[in-house]
Image (cartoon, rainbow, N blue to C red; front, top):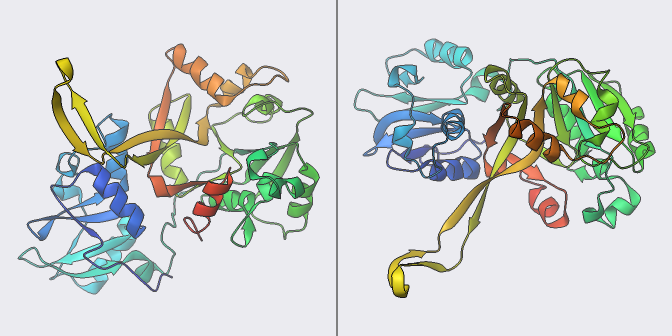
Length: 359
């Protein structure tokens, strides 16, 4: 149970703020829910889900949060006249991270946190999915040398566990039981590691490549083993997101393939200039920030796509994505915030990311 919670001021954002400002604040405070204020009084609640739905609909990241809020009758808050038992039951029923208590004047007089009420850690979900997961763990990890001269990238430690075990643990929490590891480089060490563990609530199956087939070529070996919707993940990323929501988005939208997209912010440390004809200055923008959505390396695929992987050929998953998209078949993107994912594939990212998703 979390013993230290953010202050009301850290969990609050003004109605005039942008989605980008809200995402950054969520990342800073390590929350997925904010209280929206209007002139310092309670106005509504904003969740990461509200922002994700807006991004999925194509709204720009600079959109004002006022334009994406849910109707107020769909927002869950407590009032000072509610009993503690009523508030507790509402938190449990709605599975909220926290719930503010509002008085008649619109002041926030208290916040109840879900982990204090339920005794469960933040982010715990009661929803379960039992679908296969494929983790691509066959690469040499050349960008992490010299460490990967000794161990494969999948066994690089993040805290007290190797990253591949952390990835599997996150899937296991939402009910996943069947895990397929596509392995090649120093795969014996990966197998030895899992054999040394006490049996867990999941099964690890090894798909041994006899060559290096890129980021998707080894999926060929699974075409007769997987016949339901499944996840694919690189072995060097951690995603802090309820995987049931990604799965539900994929199924609801009837996508053939869904990419988990991560926001990345790049500040420009200079004033940028816009000019018109004859070089006349039209605008100076001081130290702007560019925001992109990038491929995190996690996907959801329909099983028939396995039939489209060429046999024992070098094949990147981006080639599969482009093939599906070019044929006007459905490829979706599920967005997550910048600090909701960590890529440890190279030294700078590994060092920066060690504490970002600490369990």
